Length: 217
Picture 1 (cartoon, rainbow, N blue to C red):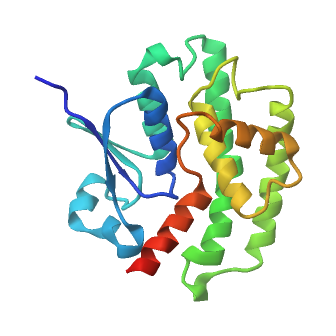
Picture 2 (tube, rainbow, N blue to C red; picture 1 turned 90 degrees about the vertical axis):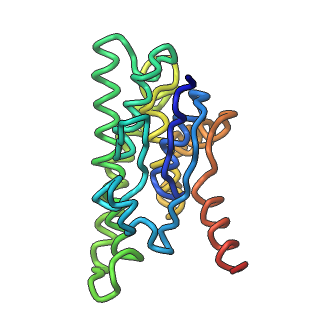
């Protein structure tokens, strides 16, 4: 009996790109299921049974349903330990967790604040003064990552890990709103990561595809 294919519920340019990247790097055969956010498909009863938060991505692996992009990435890395996307060395693994948490708290959260107050919140709830504060918060922490990656090819150790896939997507997000210009090391790292043969589409390409689909309807 053949094992059941994993299912990835996704919609680029969301953080589901991160999980697709891990799956593609692993060479795992999976079924991609597009959940069109503009059409509200993430709020249907069927999808909310998978993720009551109504957010993407969602990975279904047999009887297991996993949400949150970083949790899914770590799950996949541990499911396929031969690829070494999580270091076996305790010290290196602790550094992987350190930079993962740094990415999603110190770098990603300012990007979310900017997105919410420019597009996601209803206009009446947006706080324009929050945007320059969030941009500065990102910049302050990007300095830390810029210095960390100086003379490094990867975030941790000598080979790619899940920390790289999460960081590269986050930096691509920052690049879309012109926050990376002062950081040549991060720009070079971002370019190098997306030149990997199994890298997913970038956010700009995903947005272009959405616009094309809307124009054709």
